Image 1 (spheres, rainbow, N blue to C red):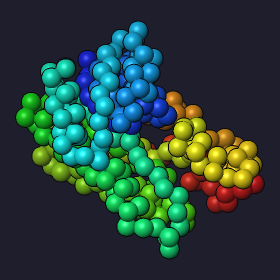
Image 2: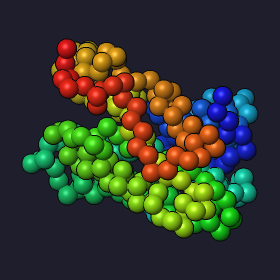
Image 3: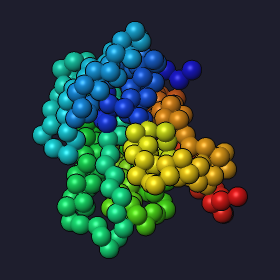
Image 4: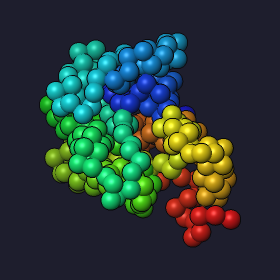
Length: 262
């Protein structure tokens, strides 16, 4: 089993869905986690799930679209655990609107959370790692939409392309790489998370929408968040010590399919 024992870091968007599963998966394997979200009540629920696990979890209310709060989150890890070894940039915003209807406000909201938030957290965390002479792992949650597109998710798709570019740019920064600081991206497809549930609920027939999405996958279902969190845990661990600049697709074969429906 991949061990993260003694490693300390941050998981954003930790109040539910994939973020919550990442917190639990890491704590199960001995990692200490500062769990971030704007929703403090649900953050406490996440921490409650992890209270009897080997790792420690600290719930911190923060908005990753605010640079100062991101910087303070890194400082909180240092204060709680004495150092930082990893970050998982999971927090994200999604607005369903086609290209012609996308507004500047949509673009700004998504960019600040999905792109600038990960940029700030990676920057401040890697500086702290360098200052302490520590190796580390930066994990960005991208998407299959980092390499494809959805006409109803223009701003979101663009942001996820940017996350992949950010990941690769950090990975080839030699000062970081030669210090053992790695940066990788995980590209999930649809997952059984609140964000995807909201997408289904917006349709006239949510059950039919779910069925159609599932049929696009060769495995004929969408992922459970834990299936993606297990990949994140691997990237945080030392077992992935030579994995840097990778874009690991976790999509049940969706991207390998020539046709999206049977």
